[in-house]
Length: 583
Image (cartoon, rainbow, N blue to C red; front, side, top):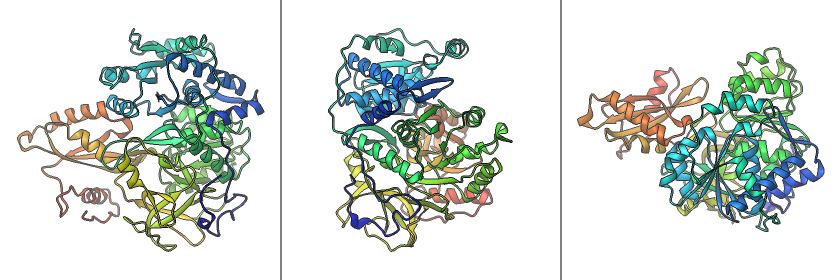
């Protein structure tokens, strides 16, 4: 049950369609709810992966095998195991297996740079990592630098494929991979599972469903990633709320799961929401437009969810030119702002192909797993990101305070409800900065976003207060990239901004001022900067452009005036420039 008091409910809650204002939540772990799907529909397809179907009966058996394998390896309750995997059956089985034994899944991007892997594993005190064979070199690079000895479980895509695709994939793709080191620290997935076969089966953990179960990552205002501590209760609430807010009875639906599992949107909606509702998650390990279009056309999922970049790409898919998409029951967009123009194009794209739906935009953050509000069915208001999920409450406050503003006034968006995180991992200062107790006695997440609420309860996102760039749905924090660039001995100062990109919506541009003694060595400096970035920054956050300047503009207090650079770039591109403000 939600612990939010009823007086926080506004009169408009629950008035749109059949979306309830409040829900009842089971007192159970994620694993326990997933098992209920197996008990209800043992022969339904849980996972579909590159031509191989796995029933709920088979999937739960795989989870049990994986749990025993972790126990045989020595993983105990509350240990943190790092999962650095794309959307594959092994990754999903490991996620629920860890929940079954009361361990914690430390979820990171499979394309993480070596420095990012090192940071996340040390922060989480993780001594086990599951990764894909093609990403092993990045782990090998930092394995000796970890604070504690670690074991590496190596999975292969071919292990999860049917014959003859298994043999073909191994021959054409995997044999080109860098060989896995022959060391006791490394164990292949099949050997890992085999070692668990002799381990005695143990009852599921008695760990409380409200305790830490998952760590996801988000950038920090200080330039350091933050580990976001989430519970089974948080994920379960998100799953129940998502179904209720969708307005659909999603039992046995098919979802096209392309959003990655290190992201709350992918893990919380495309995977967990699906698997506790006897749905089929069609797993895609990476986004490829042709493959995505083929899966959409041929597998006919009921629901698709993605970021605006995905839908921008979909408009150009040749394979969908004359496709019949009338089977679609829902299309949801999150992770970034869906522009009014892109929504119009996507809605027209759907209508032209027989779909009776519109793309529906949501809003949320990793600190609340994922979405906390959604556009109601057939209730779109231009510029709005929808109304709150059941049991999620919004208010707008004067920035820098906890003072609530009247409806219609612009301020910082705050949110609270049962999906609110437990806090940041080993970072009480950032936790206190993000979650504040207001005069009403409730703890509210201060989003760092400017917005407003109209008199009907529709929420409007205006812009970010924090310096954050969103590219392809991923949050990128400029200060993190600046910290890396300024490790180059030739660099005196740097500033990173986001500039428009036709495909990714935004891309990274870095402005760099060199130390006086290195003037004229821009090409050498660029090579060194890109090498540092390659080692320490994920590919999606790499600078697409580097511009060298003699000096960078400053504010009155001596900080780099990033808004001036944003304004200059806007003018250069013929856009209406944002106002440059002194900090």
